[in-house]
Length: 424
Image 1 (cartoon, rainbow, N blue to C red):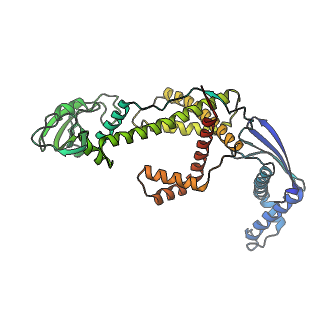
Image 2: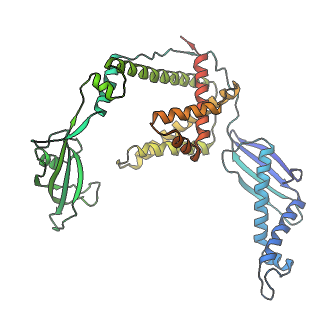
Image 3: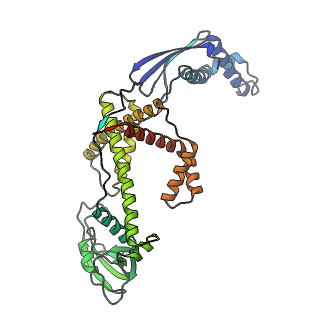
């Protein structure tokens, strides 16, 4: 589009909202109208004329509204994009076109409105005074981590000579019968962790002590408000057969455990490795906390408005994550309303933090190289024990490379803030 034939004027409609009053020259509108009209005339079929042979004036009269709509929509969209680029704007929402006005032989006039990121000047963010944070690892933390690793290394071996006991995994076949209707349900095979707090009491009592291949009957009545409508308010008789039993065998703490966990040396060397990893994790957390304190101090000096659309989008993403974390929970309306408020507040804090860190990165000339991106991808692959090519392909397919690059840039900004802070 010839921008010399398009005029635009930018206006502030709020801290994060811009409006463009746009005028497209009459000749340009006429050219586009004639182009669309020609397309209609070449393919439309009217009574008494072969396809594409109807007079243009007749086609124009019959399809004027459609031709006008098509021509103006195309022109308005192109004019908005060109005007946005001309003014160096970066919308974060789709421009909304309104107040559109046009008559034949006259210019097209309309207004486009959209939200943008706020413009702001950073206050002093260097030499911020913060309290030092120690990345100290205690012996009991190492012991807890070692115990977690020991539990994960546990094996489940078949039980012989005894019945089911708490902590055992039992594979059972269950078939239930509705005592009221006498209807017999299909056999189900399920895995039960004996002694688990969420087990039904009647099932737990019946299962305890049962041996492999043993069968037993028991009954259960369900309350009317039970979450499963197929069970609510009904009483069933269950026929249960234990198919197999396995018990948990946890390895002893020692050099053999260290070798099983991939350590090339002794238990003491494994503990030292755990100490290093915990220390690195705590140092990273200390850096994040220090950066958060600095960003909070900057924010206190910098009231920052945010685009509603971005806050809404970020808030919905946070809310979705919160709800999906509890897939079995039945959410009440008031609980969801409270979660929405909390999610929106967290969204605003997240967005402000990212805006400030990006601004600092820009001001300090921080950048992320392609080699740094590749190095991070290798770290991700190693941490997830996955093939590098597979991780790289997934990141590229999901458009995650730019997101990863942005994450690394924010991390650099955090490191910069910490390095320049005054610890007291």
